[in-house]
Image 1 (cartoon, one colour):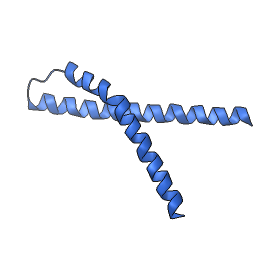
Image 2: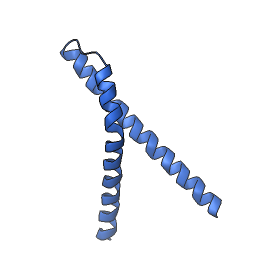
Image 3: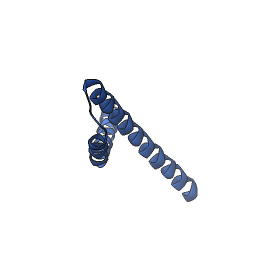
Image 4: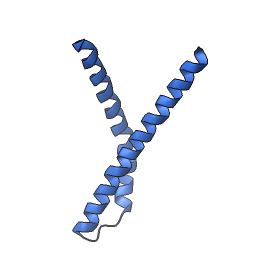
Length: 76
C-alpha cells in the first residue's frame, strides 16, 4: 500500500514540475511587463504572478482531467 501512495506522490510531483517549466516563461514575461514603482507595487506584482501561476496550473489540470474522462467514456 505504501508503494502505491509513493507512486502517486511521485507522479503528482512530476506533473507539477512539468507545469512549472511550462509556465515559467509566461510568468517572467508578465513580471517584466508589470511596472514596479516601489515596494508595495513590487509586492503586488509578485502576488499577481503567483495567483496567475496557480490559475494556469489549475486550468491545465482541469482541462486534462476532462479530456481523459471524455476519452474513457468514448472507449466504453
